[in-house]
Length: 67
Length: 223
Image (tube, rainbow over all chains, first blue to last red):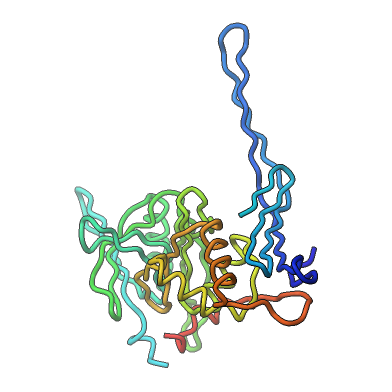
């Protein structure tokens, strides 16, 4: 993975990769009323971009933010 | 560089029981603390580095693990009551001094927050140095912010402009607390690029932000 300056014209950007820990949390309710809480932790990549036109983006496997 | 006795401070630990009072006073060569607003002259310690004998170091290590408080003073630091609080990390070592039969013992105590790095829940980043390049490289690395080394001075100016840089109490270093999160920092970068305050490099290729060794951050010459 390359951290650096890439692209041409409007696509010109600086990229920065990092590993991020994500935690999924969900709950299950049993028939007897007991609640089971689940937490699953995993690592994934996050790519942050700053474009020459001043746009920024944070890209992960599960969401896409843009400003 | 000043002699050690001008640079070092003191860490004092007093333990009172029904039968005896134990008073231990150790040389403090590095300290990072965050002064609490209330009550005055009290601080949350984030980093302590002390030197002393076997028994003294063992006693202070035990006190740290029990979350007890100490008094700290030093050059430019008034006597302040400090505590590393819960889940502090301790690291012990030995320093062999020429002409001494026994080595000096060295103890480093680090608060849970400082050891854990960036706290996303509180948007706080504790840094051991306040230099522009160190602050920029540290934030870029810990938050994953794209940028080039040439933006360091500008970014430090943005932190000061937004009152996001809080000086901490330091002995042997110049620590700061940075308040803010990744989204804020990216918004400042976006504004800087849009306003022409910072510019993209002319060429393409990898960007290498500098890495710093402990000896650079804690260098006596830097103070």
